[in-house]
Amino acid sequence: MIPLEYVSRLLWSRELGERLKRLRSKVSRRELAEKLKFAGYDCSHQNLQRIEDGDAQTVSVELVLAICEILEASLGQLIPVVRLDFERPQDFTIQNLHY
Image 1 (cartoon, helix red, strand yellow):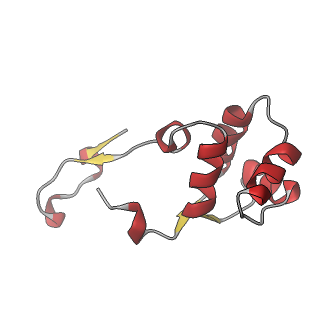
Image 2 (cartoon, rainbow, N blue to C red):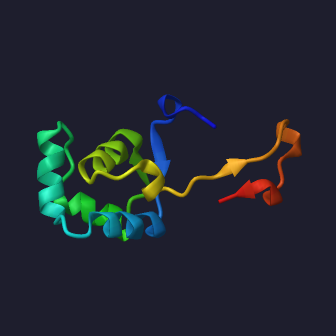
């Protein structure tokens, strides 16, 4: 597993945006944007819409973690966890992936 301090941005997709929208459920985008601003993050409700629609190609790890904290959700609830079962990189195959 790669520690998050070595990752600055996450590749984003429509699926992750849909997951975020479900996690946000009763919190409006405007309210989430205001809470993010109060926490020190510059993310407008328009930008949150781009993220939820899957129009953002990447999203910063810091922003994703802040969103999870505000929504009282774990990172695992938003992003599917992938575990790799191999000891050496040359052993990697698609069959080794476990979601």
